[in-house]
Image (cartoon, rainbow, N blue to C red; front, side, top):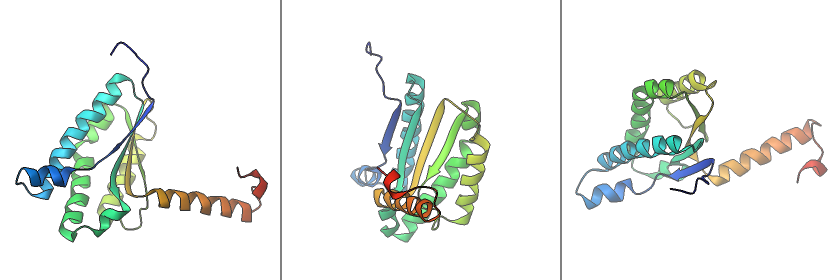
Length: 162
């Protein structure tokens, strides 16, 4: 890697864990766990190469339509991950942020998300952004609502939006 022009931000869409497991005759949860292990290696590699920000699209809005046991398993896996990786976040001084709609997230996971964000908010240099219950449509809607609210409250003029 002689050319040191690297991006500052890399986004990874987590996809294919179920296909990987099926191809090997394994259950879906085994595929998700194997994917999570490999993913953390990739995240650490990004940071060690000097890429400052990594975004993980971990659970899309559409994923709620999956079988209930799979969704519950994923939510539990997110909780396990946050608990087991706390020491890594601290040691590596890795800031962790979550984006997405938090209204459907189980309370136990939501509590861990808040704790993790609070515990890592002052870290700089390595930023891991995890998107849960996220879609492009959600992001656009949030931006539109924010702009409409600011315009309604007189904080911006419609002409200011470009």
